Structure formats: C-alpha cells, structure tokens
Image (cartoon, rainbow, N blue to C red; front, side):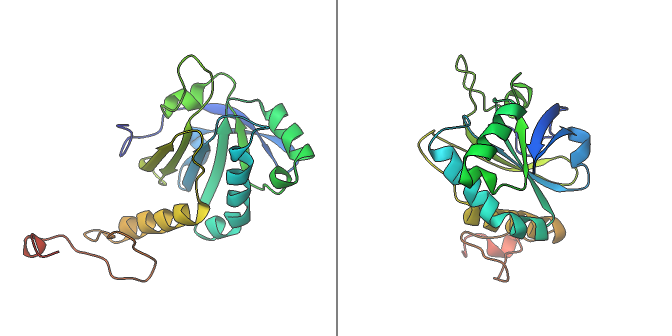
Length: 187
C-alpha cells in the first residue's frame, strides 16, 4: 500500500443518501476531510455492523468537518434497497457510493482480483485530496468507528500543528511530541 501521501485519482459515481440518488466526484472533496470506507457487499454480515457503527458516530465526524463515503461494488439501487429493508442501514445519513465498474475500488487498490468485491479498506483524505491514513483488514475483521475518530483527530492535529506528532494511544488534549535531535534515544 503505497497510497499514503498520494492524491486521490479522479472518479465519478452515483450514490444513495437519505432517500435520494446523488452524483459525487473527486471535485466534491476539495477543501474537506473525507473518509472512504470500502466494504465487500450489501446484504452481508459484518458490513452492516460497521456501517451502523459509522452511522451512530456520523454527527461526531461531521463536527470535525469530515464527510463519510461508504463504497462497495454494488449499485446505488442496491444501497437503496438495503436501506429500505435493514433497520441498521436505514439509520445511515452519509453517502453510500455505488461502484459497479470498480473504478473507485481500483483507484484505492482494494479490489479483490478476480472476485469483483472490495476488501475492508478505510482511507482518510485531507482537504487537498491527499491520503493521510489507510487501513485494510481481512473480510472477517470488522472496524471500529471510535478508533477511526481518534485517528482523524490525530491527523487533523498534525495538519494544523506543523512540527508536532501524535504518539501511540494519543487522545485529543494529550501531550504531543516535537521531533528533534534532543529526543533521539530518550523516548
């Protein structure tokens, strides 16, 4: 995964958001923090638990100025049908992008070759369109929105405080580090 510090590639897709179909492109991301949350497929098992967890924390992400885009290789029609039939998915207020061509999934290098499904990949994109964080897990390993929030806060802190970094387990308000020759070998 050599995507860290690279700019996202151009894309256009149709998504489902709060009862409507919406068109989204890379141009819509400019000036905003964005999370791309890839998952294998609609109407599955682990996926709805993850998407519901994001839905339950969406207001907190919004307060941080972060937009969420869940992405699977299903169509926007499938996303609507899933939202209409699943109480967990029906809670979602963020955009569920359909990627039946695999363009976005391939752009983020999480397409399972020969399968046509995305791996569980999470990407944080900064307001300039640069990927700041990536995580990919095996299909059976669900992700945690609270941990993702912590990482978003750390990335935003580092972006707004040049010369500082966030150590392991850093939480908002805790001490950061200023890398220097004086710290070498003393941590």
